[in-house]
Amino acid sequence: MKPRLIAGIQPTGKLHIGNYLGALKNFVELQNSEKYDCLFFVADLHSLTDPLGWNKPKEKQKQIEDVVLSYLAAGLDPKKSVLFLQSDVPTHSELAWVLNTITPMGELFRMTQFKEKTETHAENTGLFTYPTLMAADILLYDAGFVPVGDDQLQHLELTRTLARKFNTRFGKTFTEPKPLLTEVPRLMSLDMPDKKMSKSRAEGCLFLDDSPNEIRNKIKRAVTDSENSVVYAPEKRPAISNLLLIFSALGGVKIKELESRYKNKGYAEFKADLAEVIVSSLSGFRKRKSELKKQPNLLRKIIKDGAKKAGTLAADKYRLVRKKIGLSLDT
Ligand code: AMP
Ligand code: TRP
Image 1 (tube, rainbow, N blue to C red):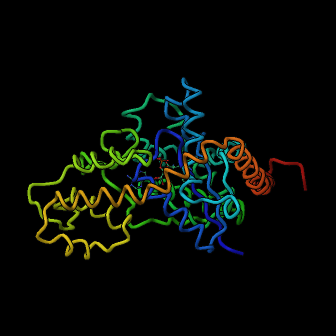
Image 2 (image 1 turned 60 degrees about the vertical axis):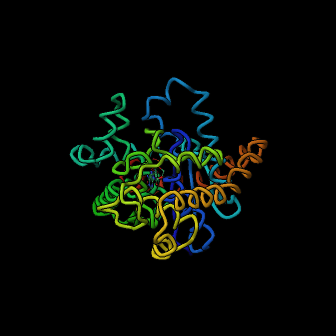
């Protein structure tokens, strides 16, 4: 049997190139490697911790649809991977509750994402227990691997801790998952290279849906430095290094090779070429996405089928959990 792999993306806004290079592009490569039994879902329950989710149901629905479209347009294939919506499989919430009861509050207070989000989001308990729902997403399926960007590593470590704790108390039940990072686990924003590119700061994002001209303008305006030499030095020269990472990952060219290609050439030429690399590597994605948009019934069918498959796996695992902890009279 192949090892299982699972990942999700929250439907909280347009996907940016950080999501793509840190996660989505990797999802597709891992699926196509045929080394894993893959599940990919839309983390719609997680997205409710963002207050926007509550007062704009139509917008939420659009955002969910957008993630499904992006999955398919990027190359996730329902014939190869199980694609579903988290809230279509209620077992995620059920296991999350059980995990909450073995999670010390101290562990959740330590989470960087919790600390950051309580500064910018309206306070809610979901932000606090977010990592136990994420642990449930993963542990329900015995996933051995989870492809994520580096901002999720702490949550994954907690998932491993909870799996160990449960297994020690009740006997082997869960698999401890390992992260799978890409070469670009943390893309920085275009306007502030010391800040992670994030949906919550649109100014610094290059979105997958941006038009070719928007891409060209954003790259032209992207912050660099006054040295005007194309050199990769993430500590000292974060801005140009970030652009080099994008160029290398999308263009399939080694950073060293780019450094020599642009030796003695200025930023203007480098940026103009980079913009064209981005435009051409996203053009297929944009085209497929607009085609798929015309087929809402197909999308619905894909995620309903996916929910059925995921639901069966999840129900089996949760039945075992209930039995282990004595919640069921079944023998
Ligand atoms: P989210 O939009 O928060 O659900 O994130 C979806 C995926 O994209 C997760 O695996 C994140 O770790 C990853 N991700 C988000 N922002 C970045 C970034 N700036 N660089 C690399 N990966 C990222
Ligand atoms: N927390 C992840 C993020 O913000 C999304 C997510 C939820 C996830 N559950 C998951 C990712 C399970 C991988 C596996 O990006």
